[in-house]
Image (cartoon, rainbow, N blue to C red; front, side):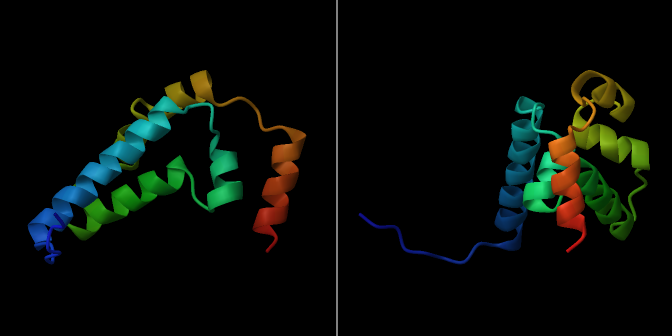
Length: 104
């Protein structure tokens, strides 16, 4: 039996958007080996972009969120800690791909 498609209410859409965002954060947290530079090369965004979007959304809503708090929400820990534990130096191949991507 097929369900009839009905438009989502704004509340339902907001709830689904929020759940999807939490799932994206969990996925990124479970895949710390995927480096920000790789995300930029392939997707033109990274965890830092997400933290800036988060901060911008807070600003738009009149909610006080610092840059550090936004990064911690995205990274699941203070940014410096994440960087020290999960971000090795970029390889020559990554740097070349990044340069090629950003030269477009």
